[in-house]
Length: 105
Image (cartoon, rainbow, N blue to C red):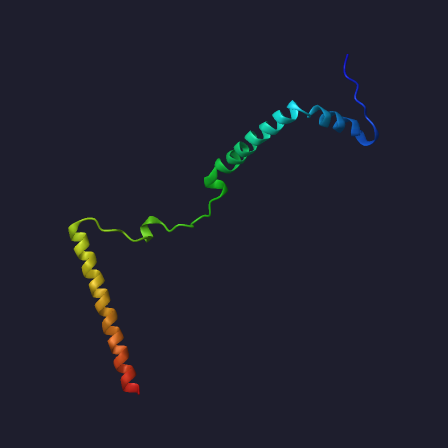
C-alpha cells in the first residue's frame, strides 16, 4: 500500500514530508553530498570549454608583431648595433633641440 500524502492548503504536506524525510542521518547524507557535489559542479561548469566561453578575441598580440629575442651571436651583435644607433639618433635629436632652445632665449 502506498503511503498517504497529507496535502493541505497549497500543497504544504509534500514539503513537510520532504523536510521530515531529511532529518537525522538522511540530512547528514544530503549535506555531505552537497558539500562534495557543489565544488565539483562549479569546477566542471567553469573548467570545461574555457577557450570559447571566457576568451576575449585579439587580447594578446600576434607573435609576428611582438619582439623577437635574438639567440645567435650575429643576431645579438646586430641588435646591439641597432640599439646603439637608435640611442645615438635620439641623443643627436635631443642636443639639436637643446641648441635651438638656447638660441631662442
